[in-house]
Length: 176
Image 1 (spheres, rainbow, N blue to C red):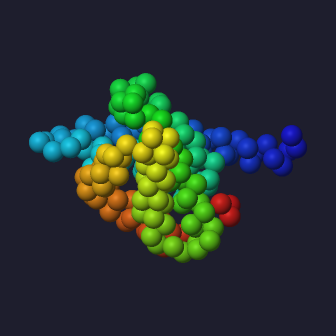
Image 2: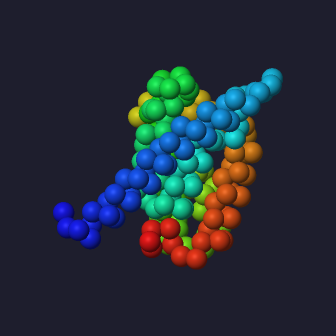
């Protein structure tokens, strides 16, 4: 390891730690909100996506991927949410979200709709993979449609945050 790569690696690791901490903090704080009679606030506002989105757009791909890959497991260990049966699919969705976000912004750096497109595409890809791997159960696509109805406020939040950061960004997130 050379002297010029060490500060860069230290920076990426430090930013990844911040991103992973945010991936714990956002869902925890949002889950403190009263859920009322409807679905859980996490399924509505999608706070587990906020840290990977912010990390990818502000810090780069590696910190965003760290938040996406570690966020669900750490949240489960600390808070019990998401439940164990959702850990694998939620982690895959978050990783797909970050990868797709990166690909969309590499192709069109000023894409103001990159965040919702990455979210929706990632959800559809993971649903399709579960559908194929589980013998094509009938309820998979209906479950996706139902969860998207619940999550429209969260998709709006991802859209606003993503568009604002893309709009205000003077250059690509990984150009640093």
